[in-house]
Structure formats: structure tokens, C-alpha cells
Length: 245
Image (tube, rainbow, N blue to C red; front, side, top):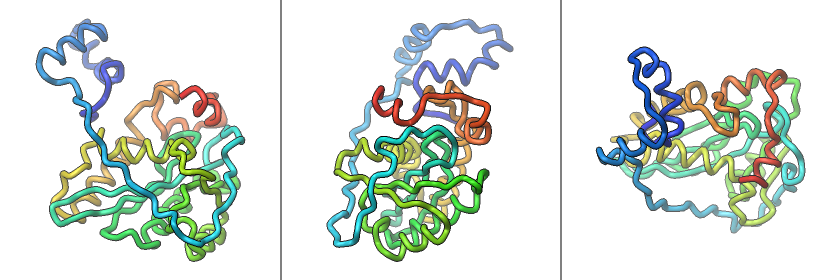
């Protein structure tokens, strides 16, 4: 289910199975066992997307830079990445909750027109669990997020727009990291035959990511668990996590 998980997380995922079977093994022993069988994850050279921010559209101020994120749906971050299929390139737009790391909206199409990001935002708006919360929509300065059509659409749905102020990837690190996780840890990179097959694979990967994949930054809980229980679960704020890495 998690083919590129680290050894620590594998021990957590295998905990129930090892209790039932009576297997006892530590992290170092498991790592050695995986290495001897050629099962350790190999480093992958990643191709980084370049954001098309060479446009004249007005950018919004960065509303999350100095603001602690303390609850679900306080802020969501958007990013777009490409995925190769046998038919050519497809494009994945994701919206991730900055507090819970839950993917709240996504869309996969064969082009990068603004409808790609609008469909992802529609899903995020429809899936809100706390509609009374005013949500910041943060993103890089890509043309899809800054064009008037998209900004007006987002504001009409009740979102407050926020853009990175620099080209520094850390200003939108959570969104970019989740994109990479789906591509590299869930095997979406270059595996689909066509767009329809990729859309099904992304839907499955998003569900597993939200409901089964634990995060160290969430106290080894899943995004869904933290998202719906933010009022009773206490974690470090997003701003503190940025500084500590």
C-alpha cells in the first residue's frame, strides 16, 4: 500500500501483523533485511516544474507567512504538477489543508487551463467540514491562480486569496511536498496508460493518503483523523513546522 515508505513507518504499518504472527524486529534489523533483499527505496532524480509566473496579473499578499495555522480549513494550499501517461502528459491540481495535510480538492486533466484549478477548488468547497471558517487559499504565483477568472471564482466561493511573495519553494512547501508524495510514493509517475486510468489511480491514491497514511508531523495520525478532530487534537502550528523543517 505504501511502496516508498521509510523503515520507521513500515514498522507502524506492520505492527498488527507482527503481533498476530509473533514476529519481533527492530528498525535496524528491518532495514538490514530490506537492504539484503534489494528492497530499500532508491533515490530518484526528480524533474521540477517551473511555474508560469511571467504575467501581468495582480498577485495577492502572502497571508500565511507570519500567521500560525492552528486549525483545519484555516488555510489550503494549491499546486499543479505534471504526470506522464502513455498518451502524453496530464496535469494534476491539488489543494491541501495546511493544518491537517489532508487533500481537500483535486483535478486531473490533459491541459493546464484555468478549469483545472477551478474544478479542484469546487471539490474543496463542497467537501468543507467547517463552513463557518473563513479559509485562506494560498498558492504560488502561477497564471492559473492569479488570473482574474480564477480569483473571482474563488472569492465568490468565500476564499481569501494569498500568493507567495518570492520564488522560494518553501513559501508553498506543503502543497509541493504532497504533489511529490502522490507521484513518487504512490507510484503515479509514468504508470498510467491514459487519462481515464490516471484519474482512477489519483482518486485511489488520494483516499489512501487521507485515510491510511500516517504523518510524523501529525503525531503518527492520518490527515483525515486530524482534520475532523482539530478541536480536540493539539499539534505544532504550520509556522513552527516550517522553521523546524
